[in-house]
Image (cartoon, rainbow, N blue to C red; front, side, top):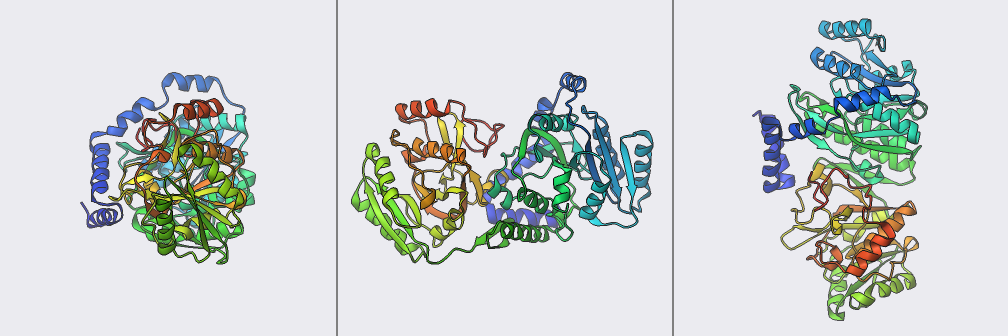
Amino acid sequence: MSMNGIERIRKYQQSHGTVYTLKRLGQKAAQQLLGSYDRRWMRERVSAEELKKQRDNQPSAGLISVVIPVYNTDPEMLSDLLESLESQSYLNFEVVLYNGASTREETLAVLKEKSENEPRFRVIHGKTNRGISGNTNEAVTYARGEYIALCDHDDLLTPDALWRMAECIVEKYPDVIYSDENRITQNGRRHMDPHYKPDYCPDTLISDNYMCHLTVIRKLLLEAVGGMRAGFDGSQDHDLFLRLTEKTDKIEHLPYILYSWREVFSSKSHTDLYTCLENGCRAAVEHEAVLGRKADAIPVNKEIRLWYEIPEDVSVEAIVHGDSEEECQECLGELQFRTDWPNLTGSIVVAGETERIALINEAARTSSADYLLILDAGVTEMNRYFIREMLMYAQRDDVAGVTGVLTDRKKHITHGGFALGMEHTVQCINEGMFVTAGGWHDMMNKVHNVSAVSLCCLMVKRENWLDLDEGYRGGLAAADLGLRQKQGGKWFVFTPHAQAVKEPCSLLLSGDERDPEDIARYEERWGKDVYDPCYSRRFGRKKANYQF
């Protein structure tokens, strides 16, 4: 292994812990050497029979233009990409390749051969190399389709990729469409690391460019935002997607793996990750400014770490609920001692499960504070910025609530938001995982959206408070709240930077011992198969741990 590879593993171990690092190394070895995921990929990819049906049933989506920036691309990789486009089951497409003054004869030979033999392929020869952003923008100017598909010069599309996009265009007429993806080894022998994505989640996208590829964008919208911007190398796609979301929310996610991103170790994300992150931070700050939110951002452990301004005079009331007054007073006292927010008051709710939800509602309705922090009396060991970290997101009008990460005393997660539509109705996300491990695509180390959070820890702007349904006795009231707030267009946010200790309890919904009447009430209102836009259906439903 190269020294660069060893250094990457060492840094990963420092931020994710030894146990999780060894687990990921084992997964990587199994995928690359044994083809553990490759076999799954072969089973799940589109069949020849389905491709024939697609070719015989063409959606009336019009011309789709695939734009590809090219500069001295490996000829074999470029040929593989173009062959994957030739195999598409959707027929009404064109490929626009903008050659940024390549000097490699083998690359030029591939471009010449393909353009001469495939009328849908057009090659535009530029006089200079404008970089990925500039070359892509130039290709867009020559595109004739209403929709533009972004594609890198060394990746692969599945044969049903454009057909799926065309079907979505006909059914939904969106502005932006993106799909799931996986990676392929540089030699093209193995598929690995599938990325099953959530639907559009604004906070998740700010923290991480999870949309990536395959992405199809309405050309008029792409031109309206000015295309890709130079100076955001390594994060040019992220910057573009953030600016697109400033103009539209008509964004559709296709839960199919339609794109294979090739693992090229000479790419900028491998050779200069820090610069990529710095550019991503700059894109995030500019995006927030457009939305009227002033923030700073710095790269921290491969993440985009945002820090929003908060008016120092806003008031927070902690509504601490528990079984005894002594327990509630101890929690409130520790919160006031440990955290740094100056304008903090508190009230307590002492009640059993039957009366607790009604009393929490009453306390919230009668509060005069700007923000409410609903907190279980068993929460302890809050970090210094526990309140501030949640306030940063709760101050937004589109946020229904914010939670931090709760762990047991051994630092294993007991609450990181809820996934809905699971076995036993609802499950805590990544329950039991070591808090620094990160998990699936390092999600637990990033701010992201979840569909619901526990009443053990919920920060909300008072004017955004929505009464809990008092027909529930336990934690399903929080899941019900999440679904009702989502109907109103509001989001729940998880931040890993607000941390506290909380041993598991019934409000965390970690097991199957749930009130049968609560389950019946929940299922009567929402059904047994609840859709969670923040958690892919491609994962198993027994535990919300992102396992297949």
